[in-house]
Image 1 (spheres, helix red, strand yellow):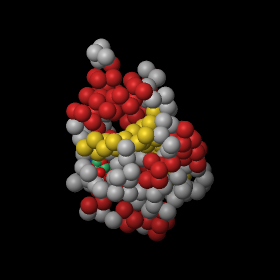
Image 2: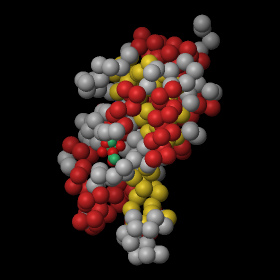
Image 3: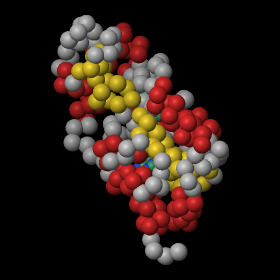
Amino acid sequence: MEKKVKELAALIKNSKHVVVLTGAGMDTESNIPDFRGKEGWWKNIDPRTVASIDTFRENYSLFHEFYSMRLKMLEGIKPHEGHFILAELESKGRIESIATQNVAGLHALAGSRKVYELHGNIRSIRCNSCNREAKVKNFLNKEKCKSCGGHLRPGVVLFGEMLPTEAWDSALNDIERADLLIVIGSSLEVYPVNQLPMLTKGKTVLINNEDRGGTGMFDLKIIGKAREVLDSCFRLIFSSTP
Ligand code: OAD
């Protein structure tokens, strides 16, 4: 792994437009479970039965139960060293932006400024009918919208819904013109985000704790944990040895 991390550090040093794309594996070391990893959510639950727009419409109680549980699990959750390293790389001008599939907002909490939340944000509660904003506690208390009486929901993309256009367009624009795209902790099973690595003209790197196969198109693959790899890479980029 050490040799590959050196290659990554060199790539970052020699690139002008570096974009990072993160998935649930970026957040597991902050104690947020992923979806398709060894102990992921979707090992036991079919996502379409809880996290789809059909469930929202047809079985709001189940939808509400699932997202209440996920929101409660996020209480007290903090970014880890890897999130802080990405924020510092941005502030030092080494990376341009982060596109993320994660909905817990840990990149922004760590100080990253240019973050495209492609699957939304779980704490942005709104009414599904009229879009009026509400608070997390309104959702947890299963209150109705104060304007129209509609059901409240977290601002996440549900199965069967489109991605937020602005975040998608901005991410696509940055990725298309990037000379380096670093994907961290994603199974790349979910469309359309899994298309993004194919849409860059730049070099591509995948950091994941397991080799899932089907990722042969990456120029460099590092099998390791996000936090450890980012930490080693950061030290190499800023070490004084030439
Ligand atoms: P997945 O759970 O599908 O993939 C996460 C990947 O990260 C797995 O391959 C894990 O092995 C790996 N991983 C776990 N911990 C890691 C660590 N510490 N370091 C490196 N890798 C690690 O998550 P995503 O690809 O993000 O969508 O899933 C995409 C979408 O599927 C999610 O945004 C969610 C889900 O359904 C919606 O809810 C719309």
